[in-house]
Length: 479
Image 1 (cartoon, helix red, strand yellow):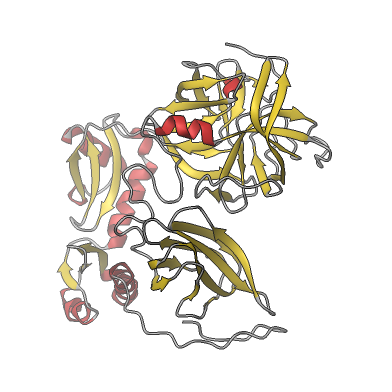
Image 2 (cartoon, rainbow, N blue to C red):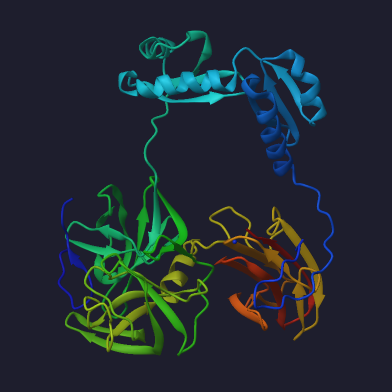
């Protein structure tokens, strides 16, 4: 149903072992001794592949891992087998080099337009030492190889009737369309996303910003409330991210309610030249729109414009807060001063979806993935640390000290605390005079996640037992 609102829909259109180097003008803390760490299987395999690719040169035929740990390296030169074994790999003599197969694939790429319709994919497969072409018939692969002018012996047919299709990510703050208006995604949930209720009625269809069919409203409440959820088709993948419109994305870790006065930021598809931030002024506000009264809203001093409706309100730490509803003012002056904007808290719609077995998609993983606190939840990290805390106590990791990051990038961590407690996690950076908290995860649960994009420097984690006691595991990665 087409609607007209003070709220913010728009009319539809077409179409990152500390070795110490003291920073200048700053005193670094004393470097701790770091134990030597044995390389993980994936790192070992990568190192062997890199070394042998260089040393074998043109004879290199590719590499792969079997049974999780055995590294196999192919070569066209049988005399190089001892060198491969000495490097810790199993040699396999093959007919074609990696360069040969790469050349075959490039020829096929150049003739992609002449491929029969039943040919759906092709790639270099080092294990079979061939270029695999997937199609519904062997004859189609033969015609494609002939058209590309490639050695038919280097091509391997694999039967497939699959029809590949583009897949698209659902990202908070980005545009979607209904038949009558354009709004913004707030946050991903299992099987779709949440948005504003005034953007569409139950059953109304949606398409993405690219105009590709996306799904339909599974439920909608407006006025009274201003929330809705969209159920998307298999072509769309929910992600725990919000577009910040500066080439980066905010990772969503949960939906812990922030108190009045907290800093929050908003993302929407109309005002997408920057992220707009301010603070929570009140909670539980009531607003009278022309279409009716909406209660229980978050009042902020952040601007928004038509089409930002449904977009995401979140804390800099990545906690989902609200869904853009409506308000006054505009972002068009580039300042947004004096604006008053209202947001539907996400809690109510998330509770409704929880009754359907659906949750907010966060950095802890999607459906079927182990969440924090589950066995193995913090496995696979570069470093792990364990400890035991009494209520109110804190530990600093790694090993009561710190680590050094020599480049910019993402610092991520997973804290697995004891059940029935409230453990919190803080990432701190040395600023030349002391330790400053740069990221935190402080949900009322035993388990926390942090993802922080930082510059080079000295970092440490503080694990704090807000309430309860017991043992914890911290897993973390650094650039």
